[in-house]
Length: 453
Image (tube, rainbow, N blue to C red):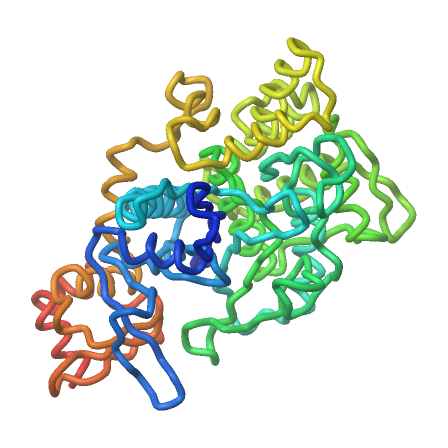
């Protein structure tokens, strides 16, 4: 199965101090997080440790930094969808803690949001990363993965009030990101956004691996949606690498994305290149059957994927553990009670508040009430905020960041520069530096010494 991780760009707002630039507020969030970590940057002259870069690698192996005037959190490298879910939720709590510290430092409330659009035409991303074999041709990945990405919105959509990039037309759709894609493939992430990004920065040995940098995903609050998002994509990609997927071909992938996103009944038929027509659920069923027959995927994810497709086919609005369904059901109750049209500003405000990382979020209220299932415990999330995964190089990075902070002069995904005469450690193998590697060497210091030769 591919190594995986995710990056979340959080929306940010300091409503009491509108004169503060978002970059400054984001920096206060990053710098304010009280957990252990190291700071460094790389410039044209090489590695330069810098205390005010607003770029931190944390004790759990993750990275917290300012990017495009947003606080951004990149999870550590993990090997399973469940570990990915934990890492994702830990990021929410890290950013929430940073926002609380920034509130004190700036003497004004700092609000952070896990969403993908400001409702005024701007979009910010949630990016998935999957490490694949270099032996798999890019064309095979595009052909095999594109129909899956287009149609998975039925269970990965975060839900959005408004149609169009600026949300100017009234209505509700499954995905926050669907209206912002304008190309099939490409390198851009902020203009002419592609469904499949061609950036190939594996942060590992390029001769062995490529990284699929997937920007066509929503930032989910729901545990179920996040687990399905990461687990199904990982399983499909593993099957593609093995040559076990025979995908359908969509006649118009970009048009299909919007069709799927605006179809709350999950029944619209999509035109295929061979002239047939299938629904998004039909295409997902085909992927599920092929992946399961080939023996790929986690058993928990495969079972959840299959049952969710069955339930969506029977009654989409019964699938209240999914983000878009839970949000739609809540909004429909407000609309019926108060006679609100989709253009009413109260619904747009409810959409925004759903994404807020605070106790006043309707999502968090439903979670506390048990109306949305929690697939992992609060204790597990707290542990993931502090402890790195044990089975990837994130373990070594996190241990050094938390226990040897003064020794780490600079750090990136593939290397660590240790102070004094100790030198630079290369981490081109993402599976090296695991807990078992460190233990087999006799401990952290012994492992570091062996790597430096």
